[in-house]
Length: 155
Ligand SMILES: CC(C)(COP(=O)(O)OP(=O)(O)OC[C@H]1O[C@@H](n2cnc3c(N)ncnc32)[C@H](O)[C@@H]1OP(=O)(O)O)[C@@H](O)C(=O)NCCC(=O)NCCS
Image (tube, rainbow, N blue to C red; front, side):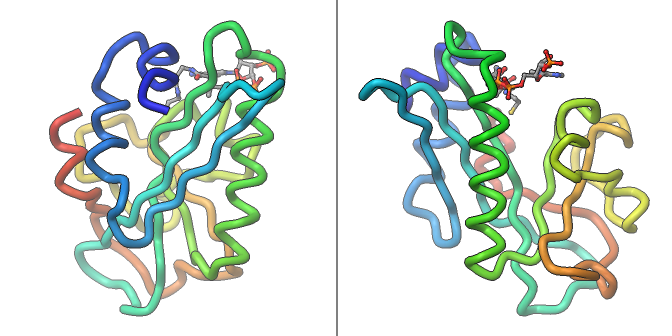
C-alpha cells in the first residue's frame, strides 16, 4: 500500500500520511486488486466541523485515492470510489468531504461544500472543496469549518 501511494503521487507524503492514520478509529481503507496485484487504494478518515454539527453525525474525508500509473484511466479509480462510498453508506457515514478536481469528483455526486455551508480549514479554491451527503439531508444542521486530523498538516 505504501509503495502504491508513492508510485501514484510520485512522492512519499500521501503514503506517510496513510501510515500515520492507519489504526485510527473510524478510518476506512479499500484496495483494488488485479491479477493478484494491488493496483489501487482509497482511504477515509474522520473530520470534525468547528461550529454547528450534530454530535452523532459521522463525516469522513476522502484522501488519498491512488491507482498505479500503468493502471490509470481504466476505470479502477471510479470503481474504488463508487464501491467505497456504498460501503461508507452501509456503515452509517452521513457525509464525505474531498479536496480535489471538481470535474472528477462531480461524477460521483460531490457538490460544492460552500453551497452546503462548509469551508475547508486550508486555503484552497472554493470549487476544490466538495461534499457528498450519503444520508439525505445529513448536513442540514451543519455549518462551519471542516477540520481534518492533525496528521494532514504534515502533507
Ligand atoms: C486520480 C486517480 C486515482 C484516478 O484513477 P483512475 O483509475 O485513473 O480513474 P478512472 O479511470 O476511473 O477515471 C479516469 C478519468 O478521471 C480523470 N482524472 C484522473 N485524475 C484526475 C485529476 N487529478 N483531475 C481531473 N481529472 C482526473 C481522467 O481525466 C479520466 O477522465 P476520462 O475518463 O474523461 O478520460 C489516479 O489518476 C491517480 O492515482 N492519480 C495520482 C494520485 C492522485 O492525484 N490522486 C487524487 C488526489 S487524492
